[in-house]
Image 1 (cartoon, rainbow over the protein chains, first blue to last red):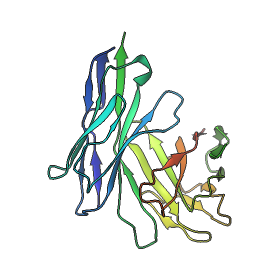
Image 2 (image 1 turned 90 degrees about the horizontal axis):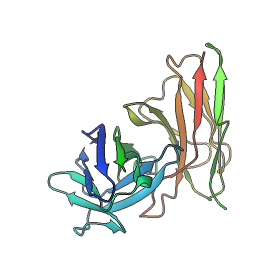
Image 3 (image 1 turned 90 degrees about the vertical axis):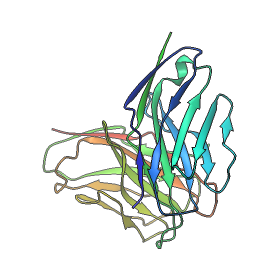
Length: 118
Length: 114
């Protein structure tokens, strides 16, 4: 079974600085997707960025980028120019290949709480 | 606007009572999911469904039940058999036919059992 590990329960970053959140996963599949979701205090889950496993190029969305190391099964999130609004829980998620039931399963890590210091 | 609506947002129940959490989506998504969120444990999959009248157990299905009578609706019942039901529950949906499909989430329901 696939697993997702986020080893940093909490991180802090100074406003305008850069922070990297770690995520590792375990799988025997070759075709999958990886996601980072943000959960602010409102608890609404928001997609931050996604990465296709077969693409070597790291995904980027404005101030958010990933470092995807497929062989190492690592998928870290880098936030540049951190802003107060970035303070939230961040979840790494793995989407399996199509299951026998005809859909995908999404597996989440335990989350990293990011604090942004003014 | 399309989205996922969960109700109620907050729910208090006495121990031993069954409770049903509502999840409705108007995104025309085929797949729907229920997750439970506890501090320090992330999101854990309870049940998921690809089509009407079909659903599968996730990792922590014991003490829960679901139905999928309509494409738009996927209610979750927390039964008295669930030993520790106090948690935050998230409903989500996706389009399996869309290769890049991510999960879309509702705003969640907070269940407290007294």
